[in-house]
Length: 437
Image 1 (cartoon, rainbow, N blue to C red):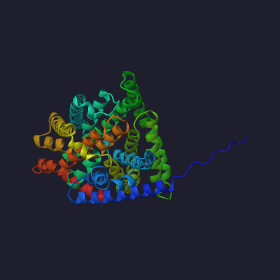
Image 2 (cartoon, rainbow, N blue to C red):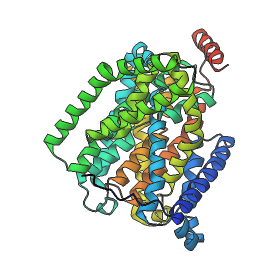
Image 3 (tube, helix red, strand yellow):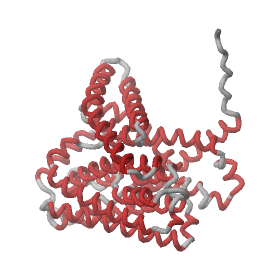
Image 4 (cartoon, rainbow, N blue to C red):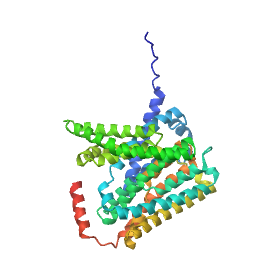
């Protein structure tokens, strides 16, 4: 007997109309403000986030509330359409971020990078967790556990943002400098640790703060790392060797997208963040050589120009600047920004000095690692979606990401202006110029 199945209901005309208008408006404003930010010598992510803030409750919602409610309604199903596209964008973005990591650099500079990474991650993490424990309960989402909330705050403060840092160093012509290479290496380690901690904290937020659960999450994490090295890397090499023989160049790009999404699904199936799978997949692809990175660069253009701005604009929609009118939220924002900035700077500086770098290099490393941008925004989004952060706390965390990303260039410029350029740095600059050509 054959059982007939009723067809799935199609998306309504109104839902599709609103969805297309949402994507078009958010993307258009994000691209325009991103270009404006670049002209002002600011990271592009600052302008893209500002698009969502302008179209969110803070500005558009106050000026034209009826139009805003029609275009960006509180309807769950409607917003899930937009969120799904944004999530696809962030997974591919994080995969590309992982591909920026130079594993060879981490090996060559392991001692100094180790000191800098430990200092720039552990000190902000410890102070951030402590801050999370003393924040007012009104900043916690209803039902959230204090320990999980504190860990989320700690992780958000501890991370750096490799894409923003790399772009800043490139724009300032510092990527070829020794200090620039050390900043990139330490930021890479910070990103790796951040995504791993996020996966553990997200599991705790879902199932509660339990010792057994934490141990289980750590065991899953170790298993994921082992599978990445022993299984994912050989499989990815075979897949890309096969697709490279295709006369159609876009086959490798599609294969990379499939691997990133399947890796994300794999970590999600283990109750870990899909972002971790995407990030590890990016590292694997980057380690497979120039051909793999070239295919990834082909995808990068579309992701960075379309999907990433859409994600950041969507993230900005959740920011409610009116929350800062409440003295409790404003005080929390100021204190959190001070703790985040001082702790990251001090941790990076002390790590550099322990690695026997001089005072100027320590200042530059502390300044460079302070940019959080993309990574902190993703962590804040996860915390909001999991019901750990309130809209007010989310606003505070996103503002810190924006402000620290804006602070990094002038501080870096001041710290490096009197540094002499070595012969090795000149040679590396010529190599980078040759690669970009």
